[in-house]
Structure formats: structure tokens, C-alpha cells
Image 1: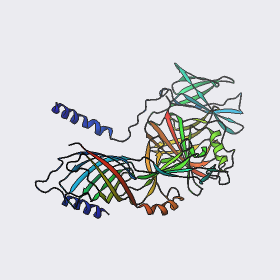
Image 2 (image 1 turned 30 degrees about the vertical axis):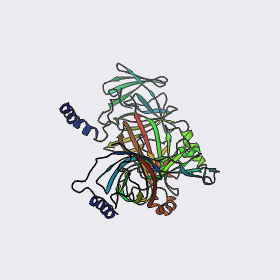
Image 3 (image 1 turned 45 degrees about the vertical axis):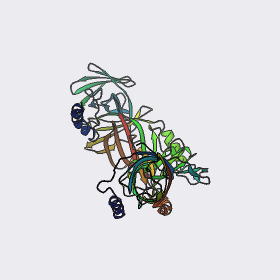
Image 4 (image 1 turned 60 degrees about the horizontal axis):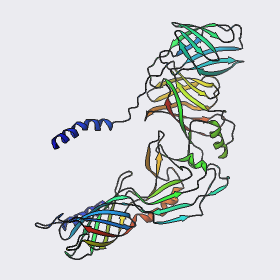
Amino acid sequence: MKKLLFLSFAAALSFCPVAGAQVFNHLALGAGIGTDGLAFEVAAPLGRHVQVRAGYGTALGLIGYTVKDISVPEHPGNSASANVNVPLKVNFGMSDARLLFNIYPSAEGGFHFTVGAFLGSPNVARTEFTNMPSDYNNVGIDVGGYLVKASSGTLKAGLGGVGLGGETFAVKPYVGIGFGRAIRDGKRVSFTFDLGAQYQGKVSLWARGEGVTGRTRTVRLTEKEFSSLKDVDKYASYATFWPTLNFRVYVKLF
Amino acid sequence: MKKTFLLAAVAALPVLFACSKGDDTRFEDPRFIQYAGRLIPTGTKADAPEALVESIELTESGLFVVGTRTDGKLTFNTGAYSVSGSTYTLPGFGTIELSGSSATVNPASGASFTASFRQASGANVAYRGWSIDKIRATVNGFHDPVTAEFKGCNFAEISKFLEDNGHKGGYLPSGSLNSISFTGTGSIVFAYSDNTADLGDCTISGSDVSFSWQGETRLFELQNGKATIEYLDGKCILKVEGSLKGSTTSGTVTFVLSPLA
């Protein structure tokens, strides 16, 4: 995968400015919406065939679903205790920075390939168990000294992977196609559309854990700490490549 | 102006790097550090042989622990002592007149007796009283290890939780655990809300704590008498492996402690 990322960047650079080409001679501000959240970007040309985009997107949670038929025992250590319904809300969306290169085969056309990476939080979806019984405010899963448990009856977790990133910092390579130019000659406003996929590697559940002194940290929940997660792992493997679809509008500043 | 900014930034670098070092938790000396020590009676209490005082521990944070043997059973009672000159006042017990390494103990009821006094050494930052912020217990024996966390150490709350989760109840004492003390005389004290205590002999070496209870304890049956201690974010973290008294379930209990003055 690292080799693929390297080759993608190499391809982008091969289209980059040749002698005399105009580089960073325009700048546009953009806003977009899609499965990667609500995003704000700046874009600039690197010659006629490449445009660089950098920005930040945040999850809106507009696309989601509530699973209503989940229940847990009122007392987690006592399976004979009454079951309590705990609706699970799932909201899709990401919150991360991105650095992307649009590569245009044609010097004038809008069709482009895009390579780059999304950087930051691993999450592509946020989950929230609500109405948890009070015992779950005390009981949790210990991940390396950080305790993941409910707070005021709500247990939050995220679903995602770190791609090529580190322990909790995601670097997700992206490859896609799209139409439109962030910066067009003679146009103040332009629209673009992109469709692609991010590589996020092994997808896991992530949650906020609290250390004994109150320090918090985002930790990955694995089967090692919670054997029931093996079912999650089975289905999460389908999300190794995360589809990304978005629409954006750009305003050229100069 | 740019030059000034650059110089300021360079000057700030050592500060930034200093902040990136590890935890440097420091504690002020406890208030009674110069008065702390242990008294061992040198005679017998002839007028009340059924209730012999075996020891009096005076901790660095102003807690006294009187060990009394009644009908062969050793129990410990606690309170807060005060000092005026060479006189220690132990409310509910009596007074102590200290004279060098010896002392005269004057119980509120019964005859006075003499005792030897060994002053505590303040060689370890742990030697003081610590209040319980919270406890975190990881219990083995389930499908997955279960970890539960409680504010303070209220036995009624913990007992209800355990019973709700399918454990037989009744093996926790009433009230709550108020404080844990380590002393420079080599003792560990668990002080409870009803002014009783568990007291044991304790050795701290680096982060390793070894201890063994004197007499019958109220709370823990230790698997190996081992614990670890560390300091983080202004707290003392005491991790004890063992099992609750009367229970076959074992695990680790982590006490998060704040220093008492």
C-alpha cells in the first residue's frame, strides 16, 4: 500500500510544473459536503495539469441509522438480570485534514484523477449506545490502563482505521476520480464532484478512555480486551476501503 | 522586531523542552512529620489485662492508631491527634507525655504505663496519609476481565454493585475506607469511617510495596502481600493484587490517592 501511495504521488509530481508554468498564481477557497463531512479547503494550481487542495472536514452526522433492538443485561456481571433496551445510534462522517492533488489529463478539461491522503481521526462513523443502565457508568473495558465506560448512561465509540498512520493518528491514502476544476480560467465560481476510496486498513472500534488520574486518550478496542469484538472485526473488514463521495464549490480569490 | 521575536522564541525553547519531561509530581511535607513515630508499651497494664495496648502509631499526617488486644483478638482504633509541647492528645484515648525515646501514656480510663518511642524516618515521599479519590478494580474469573471504578471507597455502594452482579454479599465491612497511610516506622494503615483500622508491617523499595497485616483484617486477603506504588499527576497510585475477604474472586485494586496535609 505504501508503494501504491508513493507511486500515486510520483504520478502527481510528474504532471507538476515544468519550466515556465504558473504555480500558486491563483488561490481559491472551497466548501463541500459529502461522506467525508462538511469540508473547507484552499486550492491552488501547480501548472495546467495539477491542482493541490488542502483543508479540513468535520462530520455532520446527517447520514445515520438507529438500531433499536439491542439490549444488555441491567447488571453486566449478572446475565440473569433483566434486559434493558439500549438503542444504538450510528452516524457516518469524518473529521480530519486532507491534502489532495487533482491530476488533469487535459490542460483544459475538468476530468481528473485525485491522489492524496486524509489525516487525523480514524473514525468514519460514530456510534452511541444510549439509555445504558447505571452499572455501566461504573463498569468498563480497560485498555492499557484507560477505562472505556458509559457516562450518564451514554457509551460513545467510533469506527474506523488508521490506514498508514500511527497508533491513533490516521493517514488514509485516497485515490479517486472527479469532474471540475477548483480554479478555472476566467471564472470566479466553480463546482467539482469527486468519487473515490480511502484505504483505512484494519477497521476497529475507537473510544475515549480515562486513566486513573483522569487523563483521557482515544484507544482502540480489540478482541484482546473484549472477546465479543471478534464479530465486529468480521464485518469491519468490509470497510478496509472506505468510499468517499463529495460535491464542492470554490470561489477564486485571485 | 523580527530579531526580538526570534530571540524570544529561542529563549523559550528550554522551557518547552522542560515541559516535555515526564511526570514530576512533588508533595509538601506532611504537617506532623516531626512528631510521627511508634510507641511500644514497656510494661503491662495491670489494671486491665483483658485489653492490653500493644502499640500506638502516630502517623505523619496526624492520625493515631492504637492497637489493643482483647480476649486474644487484636483490633485497631484511630483518631486525629494534636501536639502541644511534649504532650500528645489522642481524643477518645488519652494523652502521651514524650521524653526523648521514652513516654508515659495516660489513658482516659485506667492506669498510666510507660512506652518506648521510635521516631519515624521521613525518607520516603509515601510516608504520610492519603485520602481515597477513587478506586478501580479489575476482577478476573469472568468471560472477560471486568473493570469497575468507584468514587471514594464506599463499601455500601460497592457491595450493592457486587451483589447486583451475582456475587454473594456480606463480605465487605460497613462504612467506607477513609484513608491509607504509610509511616516512617514501617507500617501501613487502612483507616475506616467508623474510626477502626487495619494495620500492617510495610516495606517500600522503589515502586514495590511489601506488607503483611497484623491480626485479622477487615477488607483484603492478599494473594502475595505485594503492591506497587507510583506518582502521577499529583496523585499516588497504589495497586494491590488480592481478593476480597470471603470471596474466591481475585483481581487488582488500584487506589487513586491524594495527599493529606
